[in-house]
Image (cartoon, rainbow, N blue to C red; front, top):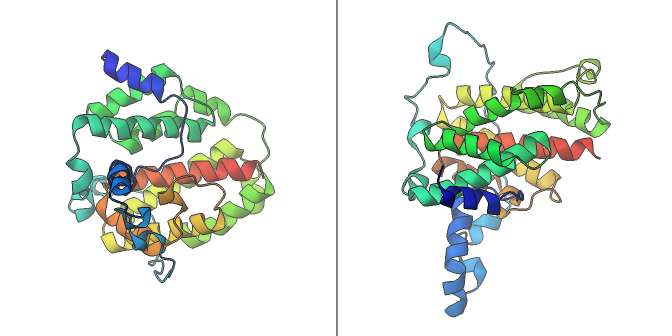
Length: 275
């Protein structure tokens, strides 16, 4: 790992809350020019559509997820167009991609562990991504390591707000129902990992029908933005338009959709545990 990467990591140790959206990235690049030309910021790359709020997208039928360890195709359904999307991101230079990766890793460690990441953890995970590993894989390594396992051992009673969210979210978005008593036996850390695991399993199934995946993500994202406006600091996550999130999901790499689900779940559940 060279000095350039190390310096970049050190400068980004303080976690921010930005979603990794190319529209925001482009807007920041174009803002100085727009100001020089006297253009209003609403005429930026996001345009009027970014704030539209005529939510009309419906959830797809939620499939039942049946895991089969012998069925390798369950996790290797690479024929879907979802796996080849993301042209705008793929065209970025390696240095630009590295900036997105570093921001993702900072947020990932903070959201999962609720503390700033160690430099050694960032370097290790960045190397995985630079060598072709994916974001979901890094997430799983974080939540299955000794540090996270220790967090799951804490005697930390989940808040009523957290329990109520899981009981509302699971039937609607996962087609699963959990008893209040069983949820209260788990702490925040276990609940975050288990709920997110179920979401990732589901979106792998939904990916077989891309439009179902986009619709699920759009309704999910718009509802979280609407119900918890005080939590989201980026324009992308705070946008309450399901149409906006639908379009976003269609143009980014599949792993970016997954990473947003991971981060949103963990950030929201951290927040609900405190309220």
